[in-house]
Amino acid sequence: MNTMRRSIDLMKQSWAVLKQDRELIWLPVISAIVAAVVAAMVLIPVALTQDLGAISETSGSGSQQLSAGTVVALAALTLALAFISIFFRAALVSGAHERMMGGDPTVRSAIAGALERLPKLFGWAVITTIVGTILRAIEQRSGTLGRIVINIVGMAWAVTTFLVIPVIIIENSGAVTSTKRSVELFRHTWGENLSTQVGFGLIGFLAFLPVLALVLLGAAIGTLFGFVLIALGVVAGIVLLTVLNALGAVFQTALYHYAVSTQLSAEIDSTMLRNSFAPN
Image 1 (tube, rainbow, N blue to C red):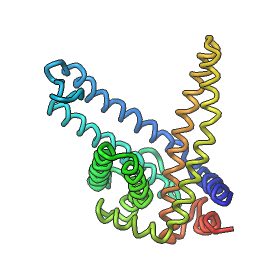
Image 2 (image 1 turned 45 degrees about the vertical axis):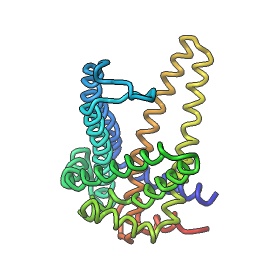
Image 3 (image 1 turned 90 degrees about the vertical axis):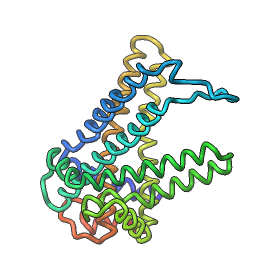
Image 4 (image 1 turned 30 degrees about the horizontal axis):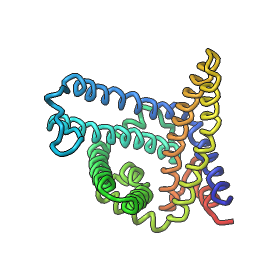
C-alpha cells in the first residue's frame, strides 16, 4: 500500500509539472508517427521484393531463411525504432528538466535539447539494441529455466539503466559513461526506483482495465453500437498510453534529480520528492 500511495503521489506531482506544458504530450504522438513511417519505409519494400527465391526452406527443418539483405534491413529497422523511441523520450526528459529548473519548455525547445545530445543518444540506442538482441537470442535457445533467468537479467538491465537518458540529457555524458552513472545512482535509490516503477506499472495496468472492459463489451455486443464502443476503447487506450508515457518521462527526470539532490524550482521540488519517497 505504501508503494501504491507513493506512486500515486508522485504521479500527481508529475502531472503538476506536465500540465504546465501539456504540449509536450505531443512528443509521444510524434514519436509513434515517425516510427510508423520509418517502419513502413522499410517493411513495405521488403514485403514487395520478398519472393520464393528470397525465402528458402532450411534443409532438415521447417524454418524459413531470410535473405541477407532482408536481415540487414530488419536489423537496421530495429536500431532505427530504438533510436526514435529513445530520442523522443529524451526530448520529454529535456522538457521536464527545463520546467523543473524554472523554464518554460515547448515542443521545439524539448526537441532541440535532444538534438544537442544526438550522437550520445544514438550510442545508447546501439547499446540497448545489442543487449536486447543478445538477450532475445539466448532466450530463444534456452529452456524454461533459462528463459526465466534471461527475463530476470533483462529486468535488472532495465531498472539499473533507467536513468541513462536523464544522465545523457542533463550531464551531457556519453552512452557508456551514462550507463555506469545510472548504475551508480541506482545503488543510492534502488528502493525508490523499484517501488515507484512497480507502482507506476500497477497504476497503468489498473487504468487500462476500464479501456479493456469497454473493448470486450463492444466485441460481445457485436452491433454498430458495439463497434462504436470498440473504437472509443481504442482511442481511450491510445490517449492513456500517451499520457502515461509523458508522465513516465517526468518521473524519470524527477527521480534523477532526487538521486543527485538537485534543488528544484518547479512543482516537483526536492522536499516534495523526498516526502514521496520517504518510508511511512
